[in-house]
Image (cartoon, rainbow, N blue to C red; front, side):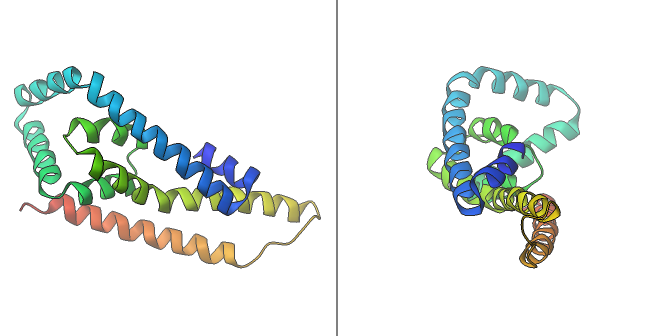
Amino acid sequence: AAFELAAGAVFGFLPGVLAVAITKGAAAAVTFFLARRFGVDAAGTLQRALRAGPANLDSWSARLRRGVQGNAFRFCLLARLSPIPSWVNNYALPLADVPFETFLPATLLGMLPPLTANVYSGACALSLASALTGGGTVDGGSLVLGALSALSGAAILQQMASFALDDD
């Protein structure tokens, strides 16, 4: 989030969103291929350990596989919108056999809401600092966007919970 906040403060809202989206999208694509190339052995070891461990871990692993196989785009999108760190998604989703043509669009779409909120927060922080030092004013749009961000976060968590509890 520090990168996104700094981009908003340095570049402003729209250029900051564009710079961060391109950078994070490229990083996710590179990580996808690195995980596929070098992470296969580690993923196999982890899967064997999960199967040998307690039954609830094996059940969780099976639910994860079913979720990816059932609707990989939806699964990737919800994973990106979740509070799971993006580096975990960057490595875990390729190892869960999500195809690249599904991974990249879901990643780009799923990273935009939190990314735009963070970049906007950085731009607003600079605006607020400027207003407090006598160099400008703060608009009411910041308050509206903050409220919408909080509401969308609650809606995303509700959707993720219903998706996780769905036993189809």
